[in-house]
Length: 115
Image (cartoon, rainbow, N blue to C red):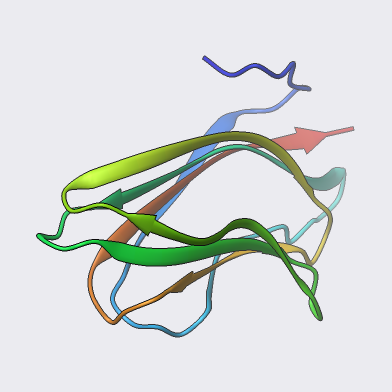
């Protein structure tokens, strides 16, 4: 259960397996019509591997990365859950950068708000 009161909208999840060290946007606030952004409420990082993996998760505004989970080591066959409230405006994204070219899974739970 989230700690935050949420505006109107549908709870949604974006999930992705990362297998390279390339910074990749997992969620982008595209915005159209009455859509005025996204509210990220939770980030789950799962490491199904036999060894620890490092990952960075950040809010990216098109020119600057703002770390949410900076260089966190996730233990073998372990996971972390980060309860948060990160507002993404149109064009902002959640960007993931794994520390090694191996499988790690990220789930981003969010609300797409409508004014």
